Length: 194
Ligand code: HEC
Image (cartoon, rainbow, N blue to C red; front, side, top):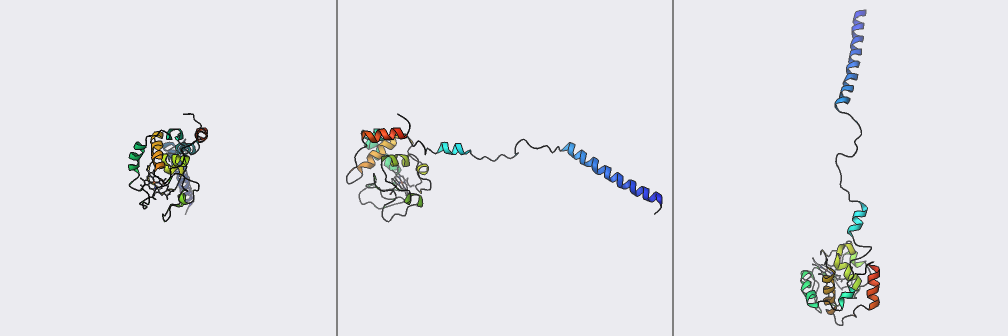
């Protein structure tokens, strides 16, 4: 190759280099690669506080003990229709989807003979006193995460009071109604005087 040939080759390389630089610059102008202010695809993750707000674990549901003494027992019996797909309430009744509920007030949680409870209920501990029943029936899965009782809950405090007052009577010997101290303690624990 003569000198002119080398020069042409050299010029070719320079030209190619310039074109590449120009191309890169042009691409930059057409598609600026500035950092995005936020992700183009938002992933909705509820904030921890929102989850905590949804589950009434700290304050518990509205108090009901003061309502038990003059609750509407007949209304409670009517409400039990919401339960009878899964529970029987009569003495000596057998388990269905859920355990039999005769004598349930103040009974140990998850203790019916021969019923196969979820690990959540079997290991929860304590008894079904008025406060526990109130919290569980308000929102079963909030009170006891992992329970296999698929029931949304009784939202209205008066419904829970009527239901629990009727449940109390489905027993060999109904337990005592809450004392004035029980009622005061429940009110204090729920941080409300309603
Ligand atoms: C869709 C079926 C279903 C409905 C409806 C339902 N339950 Fe249950 N319930 C269950 C199951 C299943 C369990 C056992 C839960 C577990 O093991 O986690 C249970 C457990 C219980 C317990 C605890 C029993 C124990 O032996 O410790 C109580 C109390 C209770 N239910 C009350 C009620 C009341 C009151 C209603 C109606 C307002 C109701 N349930 C509606 C299925 C149901």
